[in-house]
Image (cartoon, rainbow, N blue to C red; front, top):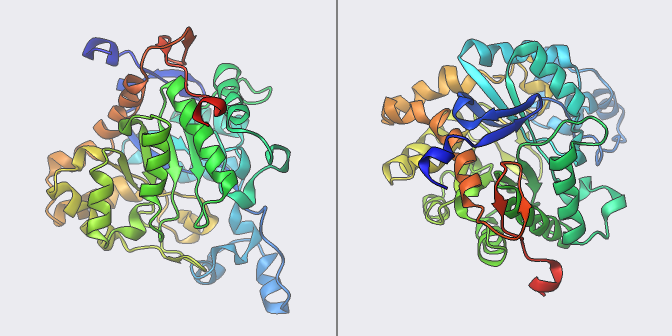
Length: 378
């Protein structure tokens, strides 16, 4: 694809296609409407049970920062009016586009996203695929990579269910600390769908683990996806592992720091890094020459992250974090690109990376190569 045609890349939003060049200031990893309650069980103790069934309000957010899943209501975002209010902070900071990485396993709601887009005027790009193993739909437990691949293609062709709303990215695709067989099958299906569709592939990494190379060996080396189409999410917790992050960056993929402003501790995993820790990690990568492969977001996904409950919301990165990066020595010319040029280049690069092939046309209108099937891989 030449430079002229690159400007014609269309991004599926919940309201229809939008030219990549018109995305503007973009957050590449949020969850506006979602539901994380599937694996949660009511605790036994009376005190814990009382918190579990409470409605979230600022008075209990001190507890939620130490255990976000101790309250069922915290793990479910479904109030479109509240989401519209929260998004105003991003809009006031010049925001134009939000990528909602919620997939079908974690409460994706196409109609609600379309309503939010209509009410805010924001471009909202919807996700697709599957999350980590405990959230998988039992109906697809034995599905092959080819069957799951066909499921994604159907959503991009016809929309999700009877909504007519089409995804714009693949992901976030779940990889847990255990990286189960079922997750590997879904990762391969997602990689093959990327080859056919020419859209970004966002992969949820267990941030406190070091799974990136194993994931990239499958996606890049075995399935043949181009690195410029691949986003590794949740790079924040590994920010102090300088060697790991630089070696991941050297693979040419996108490193997404998407927990910025999050103050939560996740039992069994770890503490979200502070904004200053993340700024230090990003500044190192910029100095090492990787500024053109960095993405920023908040991963807003819980009620205690809303500003109405004392959280930093979705306006934190453009309003406060970019100036912090500059205080860490990142040039203003670079910080200006992180929310604008880089997201645009992600979508254009993902489209460009899909090579011509056998009589199948992706969502951008040109022929794309046919990915390998299970039989061919075997």
